[in-house]
Length: 97
Image (spheres, rainbow, N blue to C red):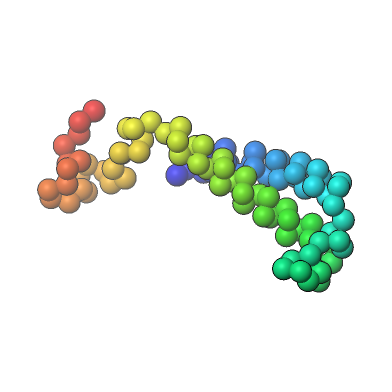
């Protein structure tokens, strides 16, 4: 996957993670959080940071899945090797398109 497609996934996910962070922590105090019945021992900034990265990863997964499902069959089935470097007997040896 090229760098431009990675930025199509990462940048919108970054922006959405920032919005989610503001929305969630406008209503939730990090000091009131509990994990498996125990209070979270991280500082407020630690909870904000960890939550931001969790939100970012989740939205990147969502955007990545969307980008994967938007690929054409040609892009999915395209051989990454140039035609001259493909091994003998490779079904993609001859160019079909």
